[in-house]
Image (cartoon, rainbow, N blue to C red; front, side):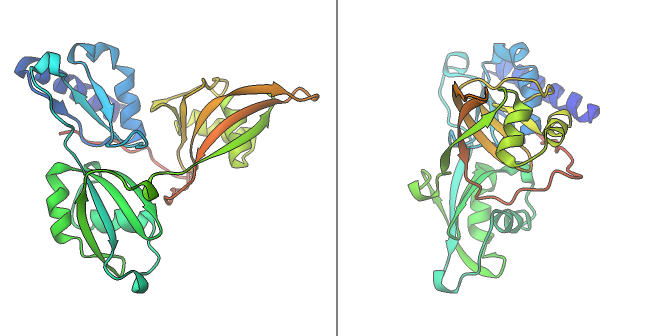
Length: 271
């Protein structure tokens, strides 16, 4: 794990230096939450290259880091991200398809996971963010997802019907501690929630946290690997029993989450 951490830090620094020296934009591949967390650890050290994080949509969790800006490079350039629409060729004959099915079929073409960003899925249709280097290849070669024949086409934006759904929820907790909040939201014990934090499965805005006592700030996006993610909107009043009302917006799952038991935090490669 430490070797992976050092490799990522070194590669981020190389991309930043190349950007400034060559006066051209440099990009990482799509990063997991773990990779993004490593970037955020040294983000200030790399500020000379004016890095920014984006995944193709503000709702994306897997993102690229771009080093460079119009001021620094002398020109503007879009992220090398393309959006693909994947849908059944004949809807009435389509089998049920999940996030895992769409991802597995694309990986089955021989592509690296780091070339694939978020995948929004609903009603057997998917919107997939991919690196521009592999977009045309996927369009030409992806014919089936599972046993369902599909059509793939490039699109310029995510259809409204495929955007992630956020559901407003209110939880009652004794305090605004992250272990208390995720325990209540996901039906876990406090020990289980604390273990998730200690083992590196909880992130605030893409930054891994290590303290179960950490408080969540309004507007922060909390990702809990294996369970989901939510936006913390703020604290409300207290009940007569001194319980605190917290307002959340929870991302409704359109993905198949991996179970946390035995999960190994991945390291994303960079180009």
